[in-house]
Length: 306
Image (cartoon, rainbow, N blue to C red; front, side, top):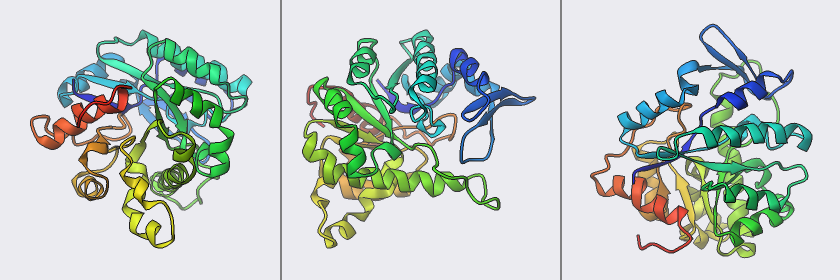
């Protein structure tokens, strides 16, 4: 089974729910695609084909991927909305997941952060979802980890994995900033902070929780020498229950990360349709590790030899 652990696909129910909103996050039909409005970022266009499940299946075939796990982009800020606003959008997202062909798609469950309820974890996992996702902004400090400890503990107790994805941008970029600015500054910084917070405070509190960080945790493992020099827990970079998805990175950064954490901790994530990735050839040792062996270890509560 060749698996992509990180894709986004807006379904009809979520599009309709976002279209009813008058403030970000919201969506409107444009001439060439869906106009997506996200707080703190420039408006973007999502091509109509990028919200078409049949088109995505054809893309999976072209990429040589057997199955993709769909993720709610935490950058939209849905989980961070007040509960009465977040829940209808989360329900729409999960209903859309249920409509996808299960032989080609799975999904990550998403939960609201305001009035977070560990029971939501149980309900989502009973629906057959692969695990639970949370925004990096909510986990980027020891205090944030402590606040969400009941959720994290329930995910750990259920032997499900946690996916950490960039969250909403806290403030609008300067008017002269290019469209890619948040993805190269805020997103990377969030993931870096979430990784450092987890290895410092999260792992001692949740010793068996399996975690996958998007975009190679913002390159955080590459800073382990600096972490060690400042007295931090650099040895936890080699934690076998911490995984890194490769979304938006290529061979040079992947190779550098492998040299620090080892190939067994990397999984393939494409971030489609945001990024058109280079898929590692599945008939190579690296391709087999990223597409098959390591995702199986990430998703399975039973240890699988690397």
